[in-house]
Length: 217
Image 1 (cartoon, rainbow, N blue to C red):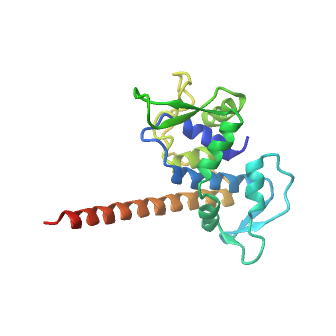
Image 2 (image 1 turned 30 degrees about the horizontal axis):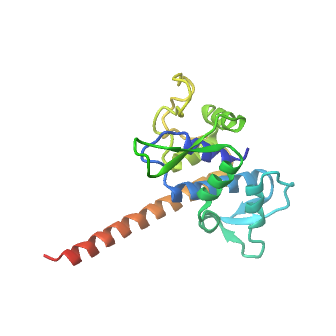
Image 3 (image 1 turned 135 degrees about the vertical axis):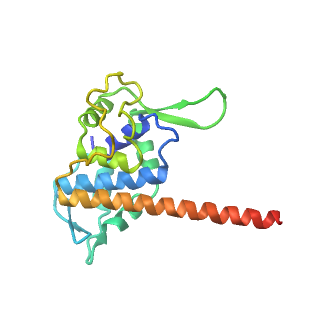
């Protein structure tokens, strides 16, 4: 399983309310893909640029699509530009793929018979692998989850045991990333999510001002 798939499963099983924003998660998923591509030698990061490499054959379809989308002409693409371009609707892409593979199921929430439906992980080997990485506090996964607001509790996921002896570290602990390029990607994810939140807040203010204008004095 790729880091992006594990991150999606963790996000869907975190039980956080409100749920993780699709835009935030999409940016983090794009960051997870880039870090995996770094690890496989498909790219390097040089002066904040995503530089294409050779790498091995990828057996993950979505990660392969990410690799195929690497800009291969100079001056190459900035890390944050990659996040915004690759991250567009990426959470929906992963949701569709994991549902098709039987890794996610839709479950209607609340008491109403109609309304929004949420997805949650199925108890599969892939989910157990993702949870294992989470419980081991794997630095990259923890750092990316923290960027979308997961990890400020005890780290317990829906359906897991109440024993949090290995998952009770607070999320503000330094994740321990020891790779400079991966650290740069995680930092870019944080910056992009902050920028997205600023856009949301600005739109909220503008919409409020517009509504007040129509209401009049």
